[in-house]
Amino acid sequence: MNHKKNIFSKNLYLEGLRQLKILGFLGLIINLIIGTGIPVGTYLSEKEVYNSYTRQHMVEMFSKAVINVEEYHLYYFLFFLVFAPLMVLSLFKFLNQRESCDFYHSLPHRRLCIFFSFATAIFTWLLVEILVTTAVSAALYHLFSKYLILNSLHLLCFALNVLITSLLVASV
Image (cartoon, rainbow, N blue to C red; front, side, top):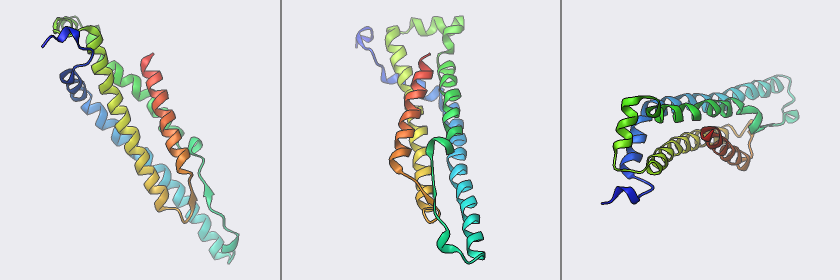
């Protein structure tokens, strides 16, 4: 097969995923801590407010907390502003090392193919982390719906904004 004609290589893509495995799983763990910590902390806070209304026999005065996704998930957003460029620097570090650079440029793939394959690997890790964290947060907010109100569409829109911003930051 003539590798010089392709703009994407499945093998380079899988190699990129493999090289980002440690960083990707570390980021996923940190994101899950953030993604579960925020809803659980908000739930515990609102449950305490509800219990104080219960002790004062004013339960009918209690109103559920409306979650502003941008405000509550700010740390989640800031994490990706640091994490996306870190993944790019980690995967494309071969350009700064003479031996690695010579090796990658001696492969029978065009530079454009190497770029698109590795960029797709980065995009895949970012997408997986954002989707998993958003799904966990949405499930927890749904579980705590007795005390919290969340517009799921806002959460999905926020996740899309995080993905787009991450790609923008990673491209710079």
